Image (cartoon, rainbow, N blue to C red; front, side):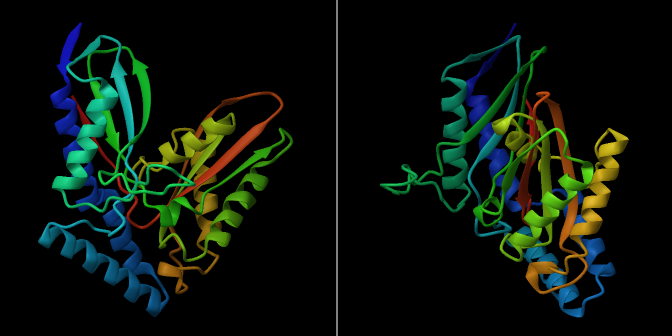
Length: 281
């Protein structure tokens, strides 16, 4: 067994959320760079270059790359040989999120009650925590702050088993079309296929934590990612909704076995600052 003090978790979570909000993943910034070179629309090219300038400014001035620093989402893989000493794991995570959003001068956007009393919690807590137990003596953390301009454009559909790959493509493309310029394109499209009602949504969110230059390990789904991306980029929504070739930077699909009577599919859209940062304790 390995004992991990909760202070280590707090500090790791704080560091992850600050860094995720200040610096984009290399694969994403590289993708925006390439898009700025290949974009055929002059307006779209100008917008992409402005997005690059914004990323440079965020790095130079050590400020968040976007004013919406998101709701704190954390994916945690906890080894079965780990004992957390001190605070509970959940309390340690929320303390780390609180410290990140206070000390990192990140916008605090969480309200305590979703409907009747939408009072700001002032610390961007509580975080949304997804945990998985695996065989080992480590804790693996991935912070994925999620802004709601893109989150609000998400969709889920419970297909019947007779649905085809083309039906899935049509659903994803229609979801992006309906979103238009609202999620601050160019976007990253996370798609979850399989599981059940809630798990396909989890898969879609998890898909956004995969680097945009990494395709699904299954060749059929990798091909489906490419087909959807091609179709999405023919919508002419373009950078920030001004038209052009670059509506999406990548489509990431995650899958899970499902029931014989169903075929759930969820789409979770990430904006051009689809952020994630990982570490191992």
